[in-house]
Length: 238
Image (cartoon, rainbow, N blue to C red):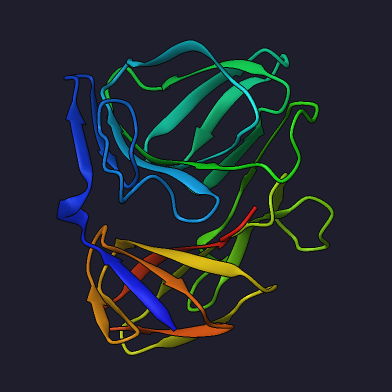
């Protein structure tokens, strides 16, 4: 097993007033040649968006975009005719494919919005754009892994995207341990601690720390404190 620790305080940052962002990988004005991507995982932005603010209509193509609200709610609208609100406990997926325009804004005029936005390189280019969202109850991932996102065509009870990636969430009690087995060869895992403290491969991770795991078929996470963890299984070659 090979593991690389990405401490929270080493991420790129930006403060635009209405938007405060933490970049796990090079993005916008933040550039680090050693942090362009982790396999097919291209973006993991940890954003704070002020009340009533957000991103106006803008384009994407050939990218799988996954949004996970942590506090507050996102108001979404896109060129497929989809519009709605995505709140805490929900996950949104969008396959940009041949091209899509969308806007995403804080749905509240009073409360801040905090979210993860994740971009994954697609398995197939120029597919028809698609959108989906789903609410997950915390009981589905309490002290166990719950797959939130999986590849198109799988029979897993989850949202699906055009990539061989699996987004898994858990909220586990202190003292618990969870194992994870990869679905196929040449996959890695990018593990982000949403909150709490865990141990992986002898490394201690706290809130917003991350670790990249490769060259193994399985791994084990020990929960030193009650913790919420996002584990993204991702192709290392695509």
